[in-house]
Amino acid sequence: MEPEIAVALLALLGTLGGSFFGVLASNKLTNFRIEELEKKVEKHNNLVERMALVEASAKSAHKRLDELHEEKE
Image (tube, rainbow, N blue to C red; front, side):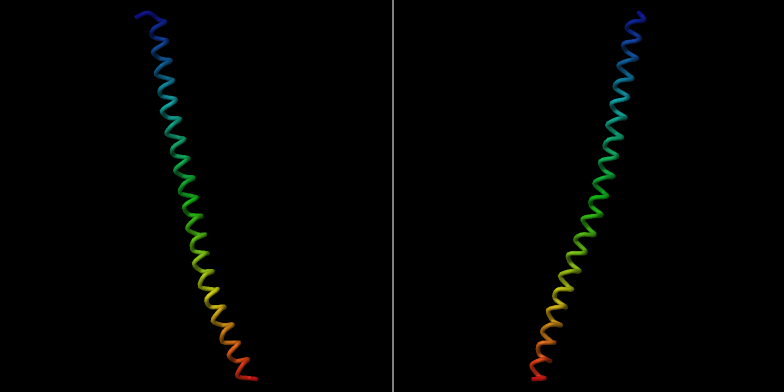
């Protein structure tokens, strides 16, 4: 085999290997970022649910205060 062909084949293997491992690393990073975003979205959704409960509780408390105020008068 001529040296030029051997060098070309080695360069091809290096390029393919580098590209393959680069894609794997990129996918790994993308998956990590997606998981982190999912965690943040879950925290946000929990906060929204808790705020809805707090608003309902505050509404109930205001209603009771209004009733007590009316009884006092």
